Image (cartoon, rainbow, N blue to C red):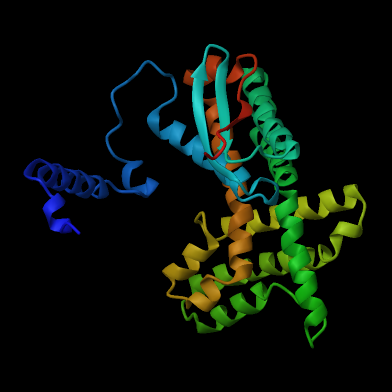
Length: 301
């Protein structure tokens, strides 16, 4: 049998080393969006959307559909500018469920309608509340799945009713804080967390309730999550707790992650509102068929 080393001709060896160098150069490119989002933008290609806004819009919409139990196989969301406005393409290795596409269309159509009104648009807080309800409707399967998991754990618990532990968590942190200003903030956060926890308990076994009851409880739950994060003055309860050197058992607990997840939905709504209010994007966002999602599916070979 011929020696493997004999297969390496000088030209093949040179090509191999060149490929290795190219791969090494490729790995020098940061993979995290935070590493390149604030970098110099690429040369203008005639599009209206700025590089940063395009990335952020795709990122926000991807979060809404990728983390939804009805769209597990969504792998990417991309943005295209067309003569009819913005086209959102949802890509994956299987077709996203109709409910996901309809929910995303509702979110985008609501944003478009807000942009069309221009100076006559409703006040921003009212629009944000309306848009958040659309987002919560889109993510309803995931939220209900989380509450069902809690219901199953509750049924196995020796202590009966299981809560999110968020109030207990914050109360424990409060006892460790000596600064008066920090204590005042944690007392405010504790009050909001108790409201969140009470609403969360109402969501246990919610799948057996009427659609109207389900919607109201989930919308209230999202509002409490937004309040909890807003009270920290940051965009993440978990990151805020980490900044205070709170142990990961607390700062990365399921309760904190759930609060941050729903609060991020609200942050995405705020950015969509900013996009709709930007006069430079007026014709883009208000155009007919604007922000219409479709699936671009490429079967596996």
